[in-house]
Length: 217
Length: 217
DNA sequence: TAGATTGTTAATCGATTAACAATC
DNA sequence: TAGATTGTTAATCGATTAACAATC
Image (cartoon, rainbow over all chains, first blue to last red; front, side):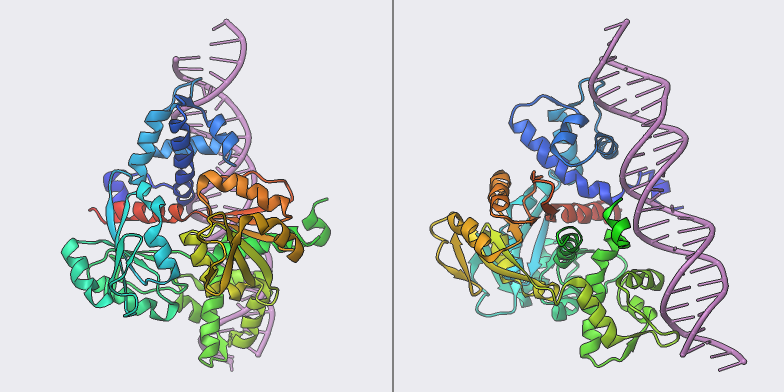
């Protein structure tokens, strides 16, 4: 008997999960403009998706609309915030205070999804002790103790590829349960640790491919 | 008659395109370690993918292996570099010298995929005229002229959501043909302009969802 | 030769799209 | 009421996985 059978949680397709933030951003905008109701057709006109797909996606979140009028904006916003973790803030720590690490440290957009980045860690003495975007850069030696003490479950890995595995090991030893990996290599972790691999190069290659296909004719 | 029928280009699934950089990074590493041959089973053991899928993916690139021995590392590396644009460098300019823009400006990893970021542009007088990672931050007013003069085709958009459309319009007016959009909003462009939408929040939400599903039991 | 591996065709699986009844 | 819209079930489409012949 699987977890899903036990708890009867309906699995949500990953493509759907990836689209939800788009809906959320748009609904948030509509809400701030004072709109009361919105239909899938409206959303469809503003994002590049079909009304059918939007309706199906929203159904996974438990959002309920009204025939003829559509979804109540306030209620839909609440449902999406609930679903996307807005009210369920989780602490995270970054290892690797390079360009990307610093950018993530300062990015305000993650707050909407309940991610609270506490601090960044690095081994470079020139960086240790400094403050970036109001957050401390600490000695990587202190990561384990601090992560354990604060019960941090999420680690953001932004070191060069060749250090990725050893940094992942440090995270695992410190009790980190989910790693957001920005290094372009696979990391090996125990079964109970979740890894989300992020690869900007993948998107760049998709773009390049579209360019060669559509531009050079 | 479509373009594909005319030129008989076999369309490559986007998931395949997204995986190719993983193979490339790994093969590059194997090559630098002096390996001569590699099989899909080998690759499968080092990345988290099945040998069958790897074989199918590689077949799209035109890579040819040998029974029993696998692929010649040097030749496979060449094929992937060719396919991923390593030898076909394209200039790009960034608009939006915020955290993310700066990080992208300094990121070395894009070179492997033929992306050459020339400069960044911003409207903030405090940033204009400075140099970051050896590249100039210029006045956004000068973007149009410079992009036209250099024939730049790729624009990287890293401004806050509310300025995204007006910056996209500046890019389009300057003759940009492909926009890599990091703002979390849809931008509207003419038919002949390609947009690749990048949303870090999407990945974060996938991670959060995995955490709520697997961690809290 | 035997066995490992490629390359390709067929089967399966899952996401998207279409159809349509229910509803306000 | 008529018509727009939701919510759900069915059909389609495309990617992944399996099967297997060819080859070194």
